[in-house]
Image 1 (cartoon, rainbow, N blue to C red):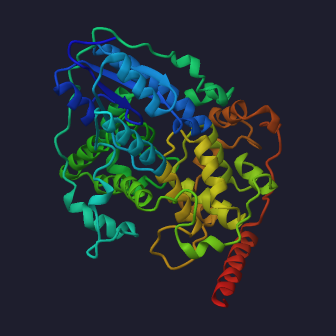
Image 2: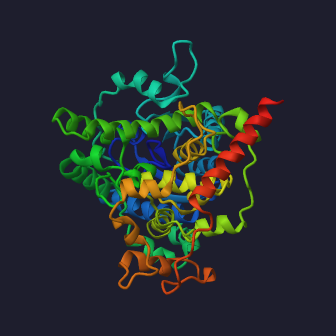
Image 3: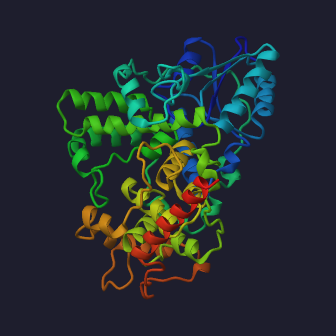
Length: 479
């Protein structure tokens, strides 16, 4: 298949939107036909169950969006370079554009693809758009990289002025479209089993919904964000993280909306902007520290004696939301039902696993990766390392969250807990009951069961965590 004018292939990945897409806009501005392509390659094959389900929904929705503007999304499966070479031969295209990624797996893939394509005379070009700034552009006065968020924030805050946002470009279709796989043939949602129907009740998908959610947040709720963002029963948070994860909305558009709210004097706007910047900081750390998701960021912590057995009864109780600690269990059930978890609760359940239960942070990180619809490799890894104590953190102490103290402070009326726990309640909330509809039958748990006693007492767990930490620290100092 050939065209009189060679088309431009736009390779989509985690950037499933039409607005604020520099690669797509640049392709349209050539005046040549544009072929949007998604490749299910070796990187996407590693996605967890909930991510795959959300990804399937995102691809279907994005394909529909392209059809509405007279285009379509070509789906292919296989190694990215091989598929692109096949498409170049089939279509006569001489140009491939895409949006840059920053985690090690995707950087390695993209670097190899770009080099191979350029070697055969193809114009291969990547564009910014996933972050507020490129990681290599932010350096300390000594030319190194920042290790602490507060210093990173001070270094970049004055730079972050919302630039021009890009509208939906006019796309010219090729004379003939290349063949496309059927999305259903990939069976991306299969691993969710019966949980898929429950998950669908708690997730909206696509660029239109992302834009609507941003508008609703900045119009109606951002003023409460500073005061209520740590209250898990409140609706003060933006709910934008899944859309940002899949690139259904740009962080630049979110930043522009936050800045507008700040200029209007909205109380929570600066805090919202600061939280957006945390996402950039996570990507920045992973770009500079390639092993952030596999090895303790603080080198001395690589000898810490975590419990590493995923079959350990304590870890199994944690993933099932059956630890006997209500706030921890509520968070784990929210995760399983919705594919998300309130950020304050994420820190609490992570602290409980790594401190009270003394389990390896990588076990929790991997479970989140399997269950989160807003899973991001950098944010997930940074969050787990930060809570475990082995990551970037200016605090000089071994942090242990007390779930009961946290409950008293952030869920004093137990509205959040009651939303997600059914046992022992005469009229459980539908959201709490939906957990038992979603979990595997092999877990053999039901709402009629008694709520478990704590598998580890909170005082006992804290003492055990501090004791293990002190023993490890003493052994290091004695070396």
